[in-house]
Amino acid sequence: MTSRVYRFTCIVCPLGCTLEVEMDGDKIKEVKGYTCPRGREWAIEEVMNPKRVVMSVVKVRNGKLPTVSVKTAEPVPKARIPELMKFLAKLEVEGPIRVGQTIAEFEGIKIVATREA
Amino acid sequence: MSGLPMIQYDVVVIGGGPAGMAAAVKAKELGLNVLLLDDNEYLGGILPQCIHPGFGIHYFKEELTGPEFAYRLTKRALELGVDYYTAARVLEIKNYSDLEKVVIFSSPKGAFEVWTKTIIYAAGARERHAFEIGIVGDRGAGIYTAGEAQTLMDIYGIMPGREIVIVGSGDVGLIMARRFALEGAKVKAVIELMPYPGGLARNIMILKDFDIPLYLSHKVVEVKGKNRVERVKVIKVDENLNEIPGTEFWIECDTVVISAGLIPSVKLLTNIGAEIDPATGGPIVNDLFETTIPGIFAAGNTVLINDLVDYVAEQGELAAYGAKLFIENGGIPTKHWIRLRKGENVRLLIPHYLSGERDVFIYARVKRPMENVEVRFPEIGKRLRLPVVKPAEMLRLKLRKEDIAKAKDGITMEVVPL
Image (cartoon, rainbow over all chains, first blue to last red; front, side):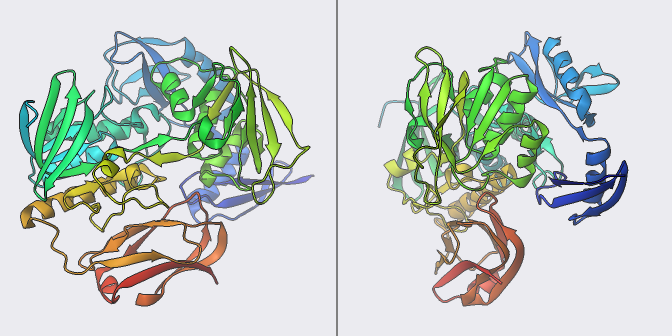
């Protein structure tokens, strides 16, 4: 079994703690540097299955502006992000759009408008 | 008299970004008659183009994107019936007396002369451009500030380029690096002059996410490419930021994005003689964000460059409260102002003057990173321990009025190692 240490900055809150996760093979041996339980949880997830909420813009026809800004309603596995971005790049929606409106779905994840358009 | 249509208000807010909108909303809630003016086509300032999260954690107790933050403030302003003009350019401010001021602006609906008792100036900041950071060479297409690139991409849906070099590792530069990478552009490097990154620690993670190289203690000195940017020349600098000969190298790219900091927009304030602090680039203010001209308040990035929009909105609200107090009393009723001074390892701080009649938040930045420090206010015996301070991360500390009142004429803030 090989031991590996992952070091990164926590992005849960603006404090930005320096986290260290020591792995023994595919098992977590130790987590260091966190100052709250959310940080510890995030550090483990960051090593085992990193996810991000993704933001982008989508084309709008007949809107106030040519694009509407969107976000995923939940974090997306990092490995899926390039495909999600390609999906969003091809998308085009019809205005008017309200803030909070679901404009599409990607593999069951809602794409929500964050701007009026 | 200018012969223009005349309108009258208690307070004119100049700038429809988060500081101005928060000020307008608060002033209206306090019962004042408010006019909000913005030169953009839409309200929100730069927020509608900042599509990333990280906004509102303090102010709305919820993490929002920029457009969502702007939407909440706009909605509230409209519900309250705040009068506003977009595409309105303020040409001049005149200060006739404490309760008689004039704002002249042009708009698609015509030019107006507004008589007002108070003004809240929330004009935000502008970006530093290539000329200001010593980049020479060709001026082909493909040189943008980060904000310009962001507007193109996130408002108009246009990609500014394919192979990108970003100059500056502040939050704006790092966030744009992520946007470019997500949209399929190749971010070839982020070049930072200082030996440490300029942005918040959480944003440095972006570079790891996308394997973007960060060159610390480096600068871009030249751009090549007559019609379109073709490559940039990078050089290493020593600890005094002097170029080290022989360390030059070229990076091929079609786009250069300058993210080298913001400068408060204060032109209309300086035109009427408001005093400017050379450290912040913004006006000298008291604890109600009143400038050195009675009845003219300022808030947000026009006062100092903030890290968080939450602080900007908080300053807008405070200025609105100041305007209310000013109108009720024909001036701010403070007998004795206490100067707040910079001590060891403090690069800038506001407010510059404290009344001792209310609790205040002090916003400050250190000169250099330090670990395990104590923030001290020796004149009033106040101390606060912090694990780490960084120039990129603004300090926001509360001083209680009882503590402030202990000072005779001045209070010094210093950041010293333990």
